[in-house]
Length: 328
Image (cartoon, rainbow, N blue to C red):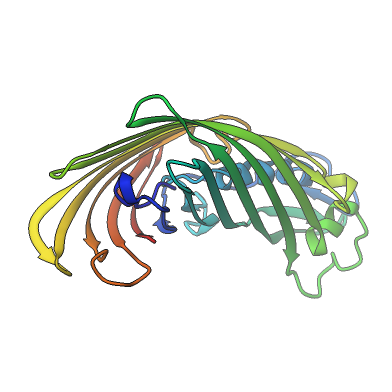
């Protein structure tokens, strides 16, 4: 996600930031499929289809994005979170003379689908927990269009794993050998991704105010590999266009021998491909307000610290978030 930067003449890096977001009214659950039950079957959604959905959900963690860096979606039936994710990330350009851009994100997500299993005589809900870990890196180069505007192509690579943890105790399903249930009980899905992004980065810094804006388009292809069971192999495409803007200006207060700044932020993300609609929405908007402390006068590694409150909303979803970031 975009993070704090030094003034252009001393710009070294952006800091990492964490965001907490709770979204409501967005159902995420398996539908029971009516019809004739056969022995040792799982109904309520094909496991491979859900695995594809997990890869599609993983696409939300492949790009630094303030709207989804920490996300919780409630199950519309139970009111409990059926999906949640947390992402930490940041990026920086080395210098004006050597404008190599580097970025990275680490993400964790949890998806709790519910299946219905039957041995031909009994039916029972099979609650599962799918934990996803993923990391994405990016390398780019800044091509200066003007003194304040840069065009930045970026190459991205992603690696991730989905692990299934089935906790049903001593039930009629312990002896089931169906490949779907085998994956639910102890399976894992490994995935890699590759692609790239195109970004326009605008920086307009003055003594009385600072403006930052980034327009980014991303396309990353994800695919399972390795020892992933054949029954749940799949692929997904992360396609996203996002716009992020920030205004910073002095409040008139001082702390640490530097002005305290107020911060206004707005961000918008639109999702295409397999990312579109998988969580019930195609776009998210974030509006934020906060304060920023400047500690650059002192010989410490942290030069700026910022805290923001954000309101995030989209189709049938809304929530509040708290953001925290540092520059080094």
